[in-house]
Length: 167
Image 1 (cartoon, rainbow, N blue to C red):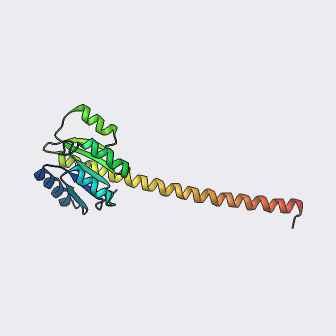
Image 2 (image 1 turned 30 degrees about the vertical axis):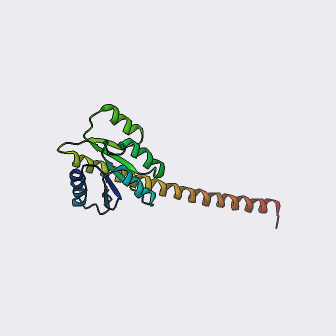
Image 3 (image 1 turned 135 degrees about the horizontal axis):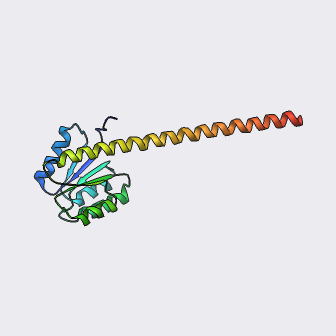
């Protein structure tokens, strides 16, 4: 499966240099719809304006609120948005809590962190495609069952008319 390159991706990182690094990396990997924010508040404001990102890549430590606060608020507005924490915080408790509150994964900043994030985005892309395929299969099954039900009803009516001679 090819990775979906038109995901709306938010990068929420208060370190301007690292924010630019992540954003530039994603654009270099041909992601066409990447937006960066330096605060959780700015990220939330974009959601209130009607944008719903597919993926949010964010730091845990942000100036006005922590990453879990942002995660919880975004998930209330856009439950399908997936989160990848990209942080220097190596606390196991924070990692577990971020997953508990709905993050897709937790990546520690190191020299291969961006490649790990890219791998996570690829997995999210596959997940979205599988979910879309499952929805299409469900719709097809419903249409098939409705068609089958119509055939059964007409068959029963035909035999009732035939047996009882009802015209």
